[in-house]
Amino acid sequence: MRNETNMVKVKWQHDCHACPLSNLRLRNHSQEETTFIASFKIGEMTAQKGAILVRQGARSPHLYTVLDGMAYRYKTLDDDRRQILGYAMPGDFIGLQAAVLDEMQHTVEALSAMQLCVFDRSRLFELFKEQPSLSFALTWLAATDEKLVDEHLTSLGRRSAYERIAFFMLYLFERARLSRLTDGDKLHLPITQMQLADTLGLSLVHINKTLKRLKRDGLMAFQNHVLHILDPEAMKEVSFWNDGLIEDRPYL
Amino acid sequence: MRNETNMVKVKWQHDCHACPLSNLRLRNHSQEETTFIASFKIGEMTAQKGAILVRQGARSPHLYTVLDGMAYRYKTLDDDRRQILGYAMPGDFIGLQAAVLDEMQHTVEALSAMQLCVFDRSRLFELFKEQPSLSFALTWLAATDEKLVDEHLTSLGRRSAYERIAFFMLYLFERARLSRLTDGDKLHLPITQMQLADTLGLSLVHINKTLKRLKRDGLMAFQNHVLHILDPEAMKEVSFWNDGLIEDRPYL
DNA sequence: CGGGCTCTTGATACGTGTCAATGTTGGTGG
DNA sequence: CCACCAACATTGACACGTATCAAGAGCCCG
Image (cartoon, protein in one colour):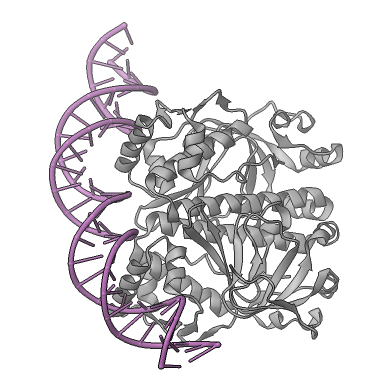
């Protein structure tokens, strides 16, 4: 049973007008919008690795923006097969589906220690009434998230294991770059090969063997939770890379 | 090369206040919202089977609501593998991604003769400024579409071919029921086995053989473009059916 | 009444899964 | 600070689901 009580509100909080995310490659807001966001914000919280932020089958009263750390979301079938749907990094909004739908269809879990900005779902409609630009930004986020899932779906449907892993790792790397998490051609990734398997619709064993092939071929290496992109051009080529995937994003 | 010029504006048009969709199991609007929608609407058009409504890699100036007929959307990789991402039925909005993103990442093509309501993308921001309820509805649609792709992704990642086909056919059937396209336990579906294969990440041959097994087992039959649900309960059981998938939807 | 899509079926190949055993790593408590 | 334990990673052998190839049958539309 996963821990749900290890989330602690923190005393000290950021001023939205000096949001730490404004340093990232994200779209920024006007003064007035920032003031609205500040009023919409309930507080901040810390979540430990493994904490459940949103639970499949439940209703979620809170929405979050990731300030620090990573999370992932997944669905579980009635036996215990599961499919990981996506990952959230600093700047990402968690709970768009929670915001507008009744019952959550997936679980969101912290991959590492996280710091989050918390919003009150029940006040969301005020945002739609008063802030057309932010409303548009929310819709933009929803559409962009769907675009991502579309690409992920294409991977599972039509890319081989080798192509699929190359594509996904390159995606994580490029997305992480927006949040300034990369260090040259390296990236610290708090995920296991089991999680990779559940992300890409493959078995643990096959992930392991295919990672070895990718390393042998000089494309990339993933060891001790460090992803190392060795040959980005070759990665793009073998994975049928899509340049339109990664974009600067708005945030709340 | 697919035909793009076979779309014809029709002379006679529906009055939004007597929208034919209002008879479906969809969420309806207030008088004022309907008036806004009427002003947002450019006109109506007809599309022949095979017509391209939106093209991958291009920018789309128009948004559509399906009045009649079906469409599907897909991505193509640089070799010619393709992945079908979803289907649109009467009441569905086509072009949410087109509405807010720059370049389309998928193609939308008519599966049958269609009748569509056409909106002007460039006036979308007025909707966000003036119609908070409709803005919310748009975001709801985006979130619901993502939920659907999430489930589809789970199928490709973690359901076997047999489960996957059962799940998808049941989904199409239940979604079609909302648009009153079903006839008892039967549904006319203008799709081929090749399209089913590209939807479910399988080969044509394997689709064919698995359909045969499903029929032999008394679950469902799909012949001459007619889907026949023989044992809905068994279908739900083998496919790990998700009851939260199908909901009444708002529309524009 | 031809010609091109579809659908069907059998034979065979191959990618990926499963099983099982061993090695490695990192965290925890004595 | 070390010993231990539990995850996690690695590897080989083998099984199985699904793809590919190939050929023929059915169907629709001009």
